[in-house]
Length: 141
Image (cartoon, rainbow, N blue to C red; front, top):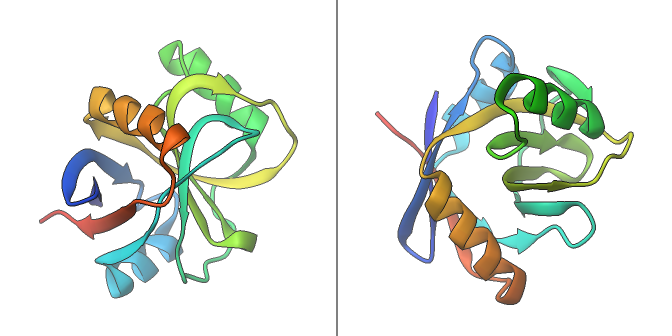
């Protein structure tokens, strides 16, 4: 499934959420999207933006955050573009750079950014200084 992430009514990036690895979350996203929320920046985790969504979904494709970073560095040479969902706080998380914390926090590794990496990086850096803009997530196609 492909999703469009827009911030302040500007298209930022396209995200692929893996239907085969997170089918329950994909089902819920199809039922609930499009949806708006408030964009925040991860102050302790590093180069990551996130937003809360009123979606209840079980853990799927569960990793520790530090293992997602290791896996992406092995596959792509960087963590940039990882997309995760933290079920307990209902947070949709998108990594825009390579500065991420290694922590043993469980997370659902749900997909990756497939278009708009540069725009996402600019948005991430802007969000560090200007949190609270409206983010919208919608299904493409």
